[in-house]
Length: 332
Length: 145
Image (cartoon, rainbow over all chains, first blue to last red; front, side):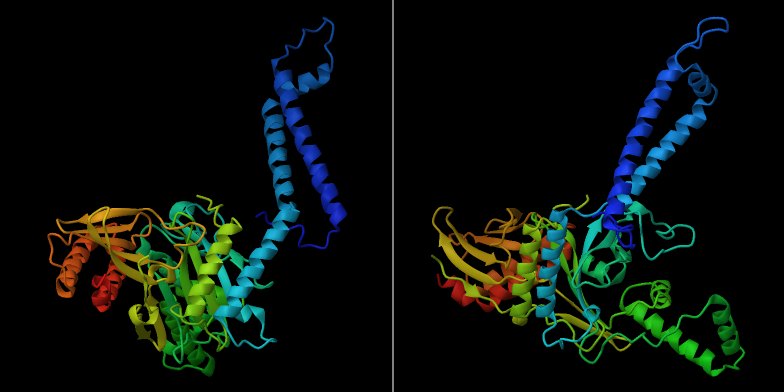
């Protein structure tokens, strides 16, 4: 599914299509120019005094700057192609398919979270489908300072990538979790479900700690608070910071994430769920394909996986995802 | 047609629950790994008593995967799914083995122990134990056929 960055701006539809058409023309002109350059390099410039050839000044210019012209045209093709990719709009078939899949996930969500009031925000109870990718370049949030994939990891480590989500909100950012071959290092509740079976974190009276009140603190301020605590002269904010550190540490341990991962989401003011249930999904060959995650930020948690309603709804969800072809483009 | 015995997933899929720092963490089998039904019958064509399991997505679009004979002894053969590792069929040589509930349980436990030592199926041990328990509970009904 192409990322429609330009479509998310307020550019009129007609202008996007015109720019896309212009980019297509430009791409073919660059390809034609590159071919002409190669032809010109093969032409021998006649000595002075002899009759000039057609467009001799152009040919002389090409002979003088072949590398610069070649690289410039190549870069121009890449830039134009990137622009066309970014501005690509989904086809009517893709729009219909997306709508059908979203409706399927919405129905499954209603089964998993019965009794939710009508005015409850949609993003408080979600169903997210993660797809396992053997190779993935764009990882969010970044795991390391030097590389986005973290120390000792790379695009081919194996990642669980957000593929589809219920509702119409919180669908822009593609969260990824590490799901490597050394499965003991799998990240998140979704990674734990990938390596074993149904995995639930936070239920009944023992939910995950609420992190809505935790505020992100910059590195310098954090160092100052730690210093105050070490010197046994803590202020109210330093004490609260220590409590928040412990809370975040407990949350990270329960959800099999790093504290850095959790702090990054707190910094972005992304709501963190208090209850999570992850169940693996299988493709048509019964091989593991991905994971379905049901997360909740309120008191309504997902029903038991052994209940008849869940099993029937989950079976129906898998069958419908198969029939829509969602699990066919596994990207392997 | 041989009758199926319906299994109650709540009865078999005992989830492991721990409380860590006040947070409940529950691990259980996925819905498609818990058998829904089991039946037993004597198959005249192969001359074996067959115990067969059915799972919830066997009748779906993908159908049931091809079972492979993954563990064999003189009197017992286990057929597990090629991709999932789930137990689909158990074939018993009742001509050689005087089958009763206790002997069946012992034979299956031995088969599960040995199958779980295989790297490919070690992670499925929990599922095999569940299948064994399902057979133990309904052995009298299964062997009555």
